[in-house]
Image (tube, rainbow, N blue to C red; front, side):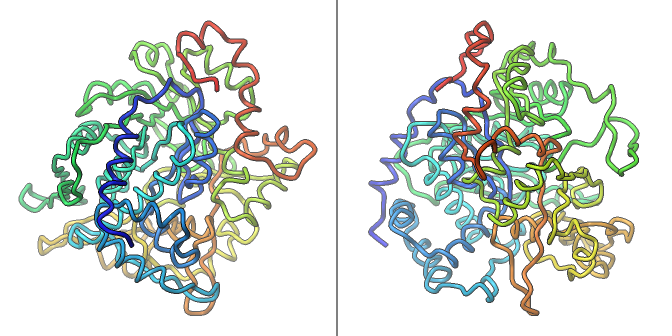
Length: 505
């Protein structure tokens, strides 16, 4: 590694302080783990729209890529610009000094807690910095990062690494991120941040640890630019609450419908299931777009956007545009393992892909979309054969032990361990280790002692069978094809285009 890299860091900072151009009419969904990686985000941003990288498990993704791919010239130039060269050298030595064979397990990093702070934070900052910097190379477009509010411990360091790289947008859902706008302000100004750890149990204020992060560890000569913040919401009620209660400005919203892939908001009111076991959404779950328009900030509509007509309808509702996930998850630049992606595309071509909304799969308690695909944990035989193991731990919850100390548990971990930690047996039934499963989906699955790799789990939107028009006369498609396909009617909606100033490039 070269020198202290400060000159290159300042070059990145100067570039990142330029104003974000226009308002994109399309946001590529931030699909984790690493399905929305830097190659996909870069391709979308090069096409003039908002390319998103996923920040979920970004530290594990980074070190596993190092073990598989090493450090090429492009990555080396990014690493050389990071303001902690000694730490970078150490990480490269530990994870990239050899090539892992496909049958060998990955070297791992410790699971995140409130205790193992400094090295874990440095790695999160570095991983996010690398991912966003690579996504922003070679164009003047806009790039964002997507994080889950529910995954608390890595959030602030990941945000800072993204800001250091000049990220343009931060998009967050899976919770109520009222604290994030103020955190972005503090990080951009180089101020320390303290966030109380969410704990299950009746903890007194003295028993609640603070997650402390201090940007001064990463020496810079000037403040960074605060990215725009978009909250992912399922209702106008939540959007209104975020607008009123947030610690800083909310720059817009993504209104995500329950047919979107990944985690969904649970239905409002009593939970009822249809004949297939999917949660039923009713009148209370309908979004009042009049209220959304009255909030006075841009909003994008996500979930089930697969056609030009869907885009046009969004504009007619007053939206600035749409968020699209499923079409991009199936494109060539997607981070999904190619064999799994080809399986999804083949099934969708014949309109035979089945997607279910499981109320049990995710330990978060949120409904979670699961594609029925061969070789994945959607098959009961594969689910039953997998040994329950929790060694990534991103979805663990902190809980108060009887002695007043803090422990961590997950309903997807071994049942006996979860019960020993005070968890309930019924909470473990049907749970899936999303951390290990989604890591396998992006081709970075762990190899176990028996030589078997962790089985994947594929999450995708209900409308995956509608990708057919993108496959006419070809076996695959790219990110640019998705944008061209969806752009078709936009020029016909001139009153809305002018009002929302979309970037039609």
